[in-house]
Amino acid sequence: MRKRIGYLEGTDSRILSSFIARGYNTMTLGNGLDGHGKFLAHIEPCDRIYAVVGYLHKFLPLTDQKISPNDLLYACRLHNIPVFVMVPKELMKEGKKVLEDVSDFVNFVDPESTLETILEFLGSK
Image (cartoon, rainbow, N blue to C red; front, side, top):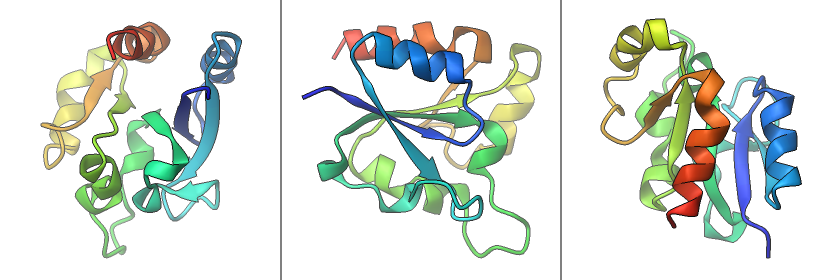
């Protein structure tokens, strides 16, 4: 079975196509607002997701929502699924502060090096 990479809307199609070309499958995930894919908080082992990737803003609930980034990523933490949050390198410090509640669990990556970072991580597993 091919390993599956979960991604949130807006993830660069070049990254996703590169995963497919390298033998991985992809699965669209949603943050509960965007109407895309399976709700991130509800993923489970049978989904066979080996990593999740998305841009910073996709992991943040709206101010009127009663869900936190920690709630959104609960299933990833529970099932030890690594999360890669794309933030431009010049804003990395600020991005980490925005997600400080989960910064011990997520991997912050520059969008330009996301593919290589995730492939390196998967290769070590």
